[in-house]
Amino acid sequence: MVVLSQTALDHYSSMKTCRPANGLFTGIPVIDLKDPEAKTRIVEACQEFGFFKLVNHGVPFEFMTRLEYLAMNFFNLPQSEKDKAGPPDPFGYGNKRIGPNGDVGWIEYLLLNTNPQVNCNKTLSIFQEYPQNFRSAVEDYILEVKRMTYEVLELMADGLGIEPRNVLSKLVSDEKSDSCFRLNYYPPCPELQALSGRNLIGFGEHTDPQIISVLRSNNTTGLQICLRDGTWVSVPPDQTSFFINIGDALQVMTNGRFRSVKHRVLADDMKSRISMIYFGGPPLSEKIAPFPSLLAEGEEGLYEQFTWYEYKSSAYKSRLADYRLGLFEKKMQAILANI
Ligand SMILES: C=C1C[C@]23C[C@@]1(O)CC[C@H]2[C@@]12CC[C@H](O)[C@@](C)(C(=O)O1)[C@H]2[C@@H]3C(=O)O
Ligand SMILES: O=C(O)CCC(=O)C(=O)O
Ligand SMILES: [Fe+2]
Image: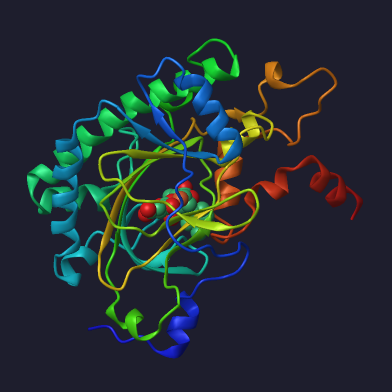
């Protein structure tokens, strides 16, 4: 069993920017994909929270449970087997280290590219060595989730009144779209029991850089989002639903109307958490800028124009909790110009 030293605990312990809240939050917007009012509800949720729960989404539950089962089998393999698929570059198997800049969490994960044009040998090899059906479960799941994500993005465009209605969905459905997929496993940490009241960070606070993130987890709590007023609230888990996150790129495209939500995961003392997240990103060459039709007369764009490649490169130089969009805000550019 892994024993946590005081220093290690401090390292993994909860930080800093938002205030904690107790209990499960009951105010997460729930959107029914088949509701005729869905587009309006989605826009409201993205403006207020940058986050919502999606029900009646049409993705068969078996696709989720099959992948969950096979992913759990993978994470239960001997360490030496899992290490064959790592270290992440950023794709591949990772253990405790998140990203290239010193972030750590109580987590193991597999990060995969969903673009068939990018073959990552390391991750493909785990699929060759380990049960054939793991690869097909990942592919089947992603196919279903993509289809649903396009529908959500079309409703968003409709709700925002931007045309054509596929203006957002085509960015992530493009064959060059830079999307990725992540399986996260948070082992239980029994030692937490003796340390009542302390948090153990599974995945530290951050916003997702892409356009949209689509998350499904087992029935274990742990995911928290930061509300507008700066309080952390716990998202009640629901293994049958998806949770949708707005990413930084969509915050920019809506000129700040949609919030890229800050979130994190806390580990549990008893239960393991497993989550699967599809991150929908645009092609690397795509220019990320506010949609002109969303700017009111005389309203200025809040951000300098940049490509997704530029943003991603900058994100990979940052720490998890950094405010990555800051560098691209016009006011920051003006300050930098005067230095
Ligand atoms: C610390 C980091 C991990 C991350 C790349 C980064 O430098 C900053 C953004 C992180 C993040 C958060 C959302 C996704 O999980 C992720 C895959 C992404 O696109 O940005 C991770 C990156 C990662 O784990 O490689
Ligand atoms: O594992 C989770 O529930 C969320 C993880 C997350 O936010 C991420 O991988 O970007
Ligand atoms: Fe995230």
